[in-house]
Image: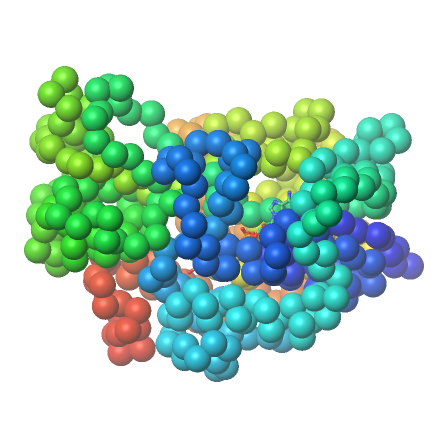
Length: 434
Ligand code: FAD
């Protein structure tokens, strides 16, 4: 017999919305808490930036959640950004039919998804979760959720389970740079980058070669005097970037020299006006203070398959932690899994079994020399993860065509070519390396 639980979902971004849909479908009762005034999370472009351009204090009054820049278009084709039964492909939601649409299109898609799925009626807007704590013997059979509503009043409510979907692209992850105290120029994290104009005629060092770093470096190069990209794994591409008239690829930043210049791993150095960090984000759950559950060098854990903390499973779970995969598919499959485990339709191993699996994963990473902070990166084993989730809930494996599409998108991003989004249908472009 299926069990039905009362479930609190923290956050109404893409993860919270699809988690709520799957929980409702499985027969659970759901309350979605969303601290902002709308659903959509990251995809609600926020023109504001943090007072501190490095965004070092996520608890600062008015700290901004969103990290999108004004010109942002998806880095995956729309076919890889829909949910089952509610595709983004083949339909237009905000007058932007492009294969790689702008952020407004994705936000309108999520708005429509919330309504179509019936989830919208379960969302409490301007309801910020302040604390989530286990009730009873502390093993997480029941949970107390303290939240603050629009009127400022704090209320605590009991739930059987909590699904954390609060996102992880809001709090900058900043590298430690030797000699940074000698730096006299500006510093900013991409979390606070919105438009290229402030970089007019500047010499800018962009740190990081992820999707955002590549997009932003390219956009800035149209107005800046010079753009210098500092990146790991760039050895085979050092020097002038042919595609741009004013951009160079370097190794990692080695240090800031005594004369204030930025020195790169390959030995070259430049004078610059700004260092712009496109170095990703750190996980941050200010409302959770749980025994034996930590964030260590950006490893959230222990977590069984990135979703269940063994000690508190199945009534505490996380949807949306892993990255470098078809994100919307992993959000949906993780959500189906959580919903099925809560109803008893899917089974988890014993707590010891889950811990052993986590330890095995950690050991595998250590043997491969991977730092802890890469724990939640799915690439290159992302297909294995999605198919494993699919097996848990009786869903079909990922179609090979979609796998190929994702790998092609990654190659396109790494190719640094500005036009890949608009040429997608016609050709397969260049290849790069991670
Ligand atoms: P979010 O969208 O961040 O939603 C979390 C929600 O939780 C927010 O609404 C927030 O207000 C709410 N919240 C947080 N804390 C609390 C609290 N205490 N109480 C109540 N509510 C709370 N993915 C793709 O698939 N394709 C792309 O092209 C793509 N491009 C991206 C570009 C950028 C610059 C960034 C930053 C991300 C991009 N992503 C992309 C990844 C993107 O993060 C995911 O697509 C997806 O939006 C993640 O959804 P989420 O619900 O996990 O998090």
